[in-house]
Length: 107
Length: 116
Image 1 (cartoon, each protein chain N blue to C red):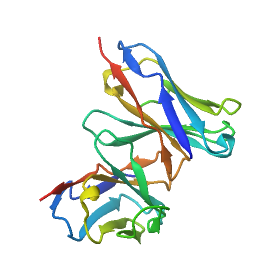
Image 2: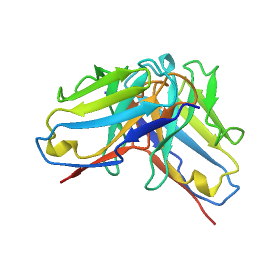
Image 3: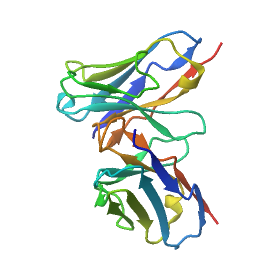
């Protein structure tokens, strides 16, 4: 199975900050990576697919990059609505696997 | 609007069974593979199972293989997850999601609690 490791696990930031979350795969997944945002008590929401493609309706403040084994999700200017937990997920092979999550908290 | 609505969750004793349903609307259900993902209390997301649009091909996480069965009824636009021999570690919110790679639409989830 491909293991996905996110860092950091928790991130404290202020409104307006630039935030970067890293996701590493245990083996190459090409660009078959998605990012999701989840708020407490809610279902996850797709943000990014194919490592860097922005899902329709997602603010352009979100961006993704990377290929192979190392990927990043960047929020260029953190907004109050962005405080949430973020997950990466590989879909290169089965079983699909998620990272453990990164909680973005208010500093 | 594309929507998914799960149902069927509840409290069940260890060793018991439960069948979850996921009703789809707003898209041509049979054209899309579907997925079940779960989230234990306070934990992260875990992929559980996937099924092709026709229902011919299925995939399972090792943690549920042999106990859970994914299926679909394209005439009813409904996805199912039959869960047998349930264990405490199966306690979670279960989400259905559209597609099997990139999960672009999610239901609101249904809660399964396995406890005596």
